[in-house]
Image 1 (tube, rainbow, N blue to C red):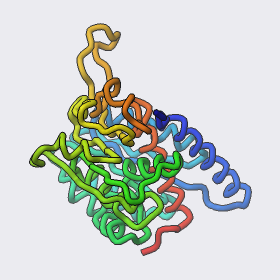
Image 2 (cartoon, rainbow, N blue to C red):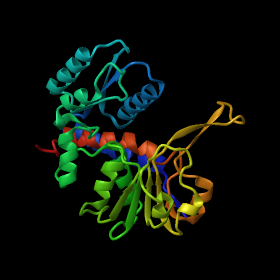
Image 3 (cartoon, rainbow, N blue to C red):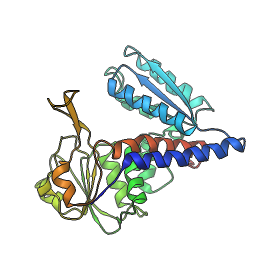
Length: 293
């Protein structure tokens, strides 16, 4: 059994990006510039954005953080998006979700210029991904396919079962695994709350992507020997022994599942670190104009 160390791989890719930025700066080129918009005081969002800014600093990117409190109007946020769309120095930007309830997230996402949509959420990028055209991939699925590629995990001809059908992870992951590509060519089954005999379906998988948001949902009896298990979940569960009063677990019951796997991602330290790194990779593509429309 091999543990897919997302933290270590993330640091390795950041070192590669730092070297790339050094070459760009030495040649007098434009250093990549990533902006982030944070509205409100959601603690998890604040931590995530802070990690993005720190990662930008580590690799030598320019970063901008635009903060507004939770009372900001939808019109204010749309104006921020418009200004970033028009700012030629900003290569890509993200609007951190969730937004306060009075702001329509779909309207904000649609207002982002697809050429700067380094989160890969705009319908233009999603559509281009489905067609196999140049695009910005959603950060978490991008991180997963990068892990599969870097660890030399064979996907062609394999049966992949994706648990969860969100627009952020499950659905794009099913598309990427089925595409004609180096980390694709899978036969993909996407499962969800209405799937009949979901445990039985998961048991047939060569590759499992668990993104259902239920703590330790995938148990040992649901996984066949030699499966590759990618755990996207990150859930807080009460733990009286822990100093914080809780511990983090994934959507996979790790202690039961890991001994049966050929490869598995841990939680924390698996998929999570690769999500931010994928955002940096997308920003470099934006800076170099590698994605054309």
